[in-house]
Length: 255
Ligand code: NDP
Image (cartoon, rainbow, N blue to C red; front, side, top):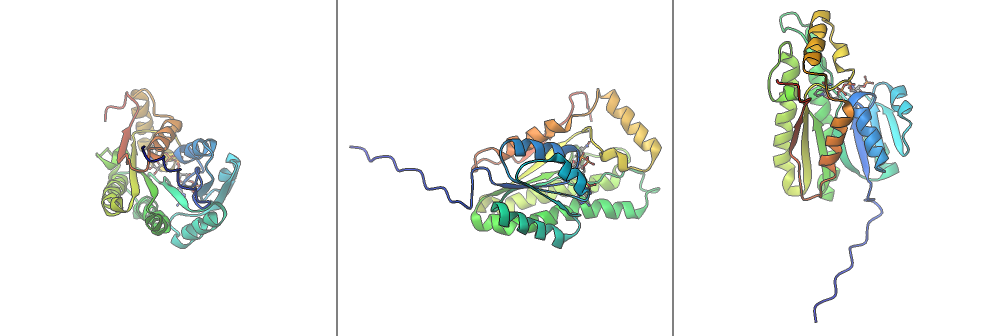
């Protein structure tokens, strides 16, 4: 007679079936759309950005909203500790906060390079630093870094920005190699143009209007909800499957 089937292992209260997800830059655009989607799927969330009122306006259940600048490593780590005390360990981090300040290098204020490097590169590392030790100890977790098509190829007036997004791609791949044997997944999400506030921070009006014209000539940009779906798709794979990278753009976007 064959052996009776073993019962499934008891679920531990510290790892609920809809565990905590941390999302940076959840105040608008892709981050806000991802927060809405993952919340609708039952996950408690830690939502981070500088505009606290925008996080709170999402009005999502089981969500802790904290005014955190991702360039502040200690504030980032402390918000993660606070959320984990309330909701248990972080199962996923969506490193989404970002800044895109387009310019020709010769014209650009170096302060803008500093800001993009601090937010897009160091902010991503600070997020990883806050959650990775716990993930390695548990042998589970997913780090989702939002890069860009501009992390794979260059575009006019994007020099410093592509530098930061190429860095996100490179760091993600290298981190994946480092943590894969421990059961931690690293995912890179690389969208083309998405209809968000991102362009609004560029100060050169001509570059902004050229970019808008380029988007329109491509038939418009992706809605942020489409990128949120891609993030959720990668996250919801079984733990033994890693979607290493998703590159997605509006069909009309040639470049
Ligand atoms: P948004 O400008 O709408 O969102 C950016 C988010 O990042 C905001 O919530 C903003 O909130 C937050 N943020 C910016 N700086 C900081 C900071 N120092 N600390 C904490 N949060 C910060 O743009 P998107 O949704 O488009 O951008 C999200 C990500 O997607 C970025 O990494 C971007 O590079 C990437 N991306 C976007 C594309 C697009 O075409 N839109 C294409 C490819 C990639 P707050 O200001 O309140 O802090």
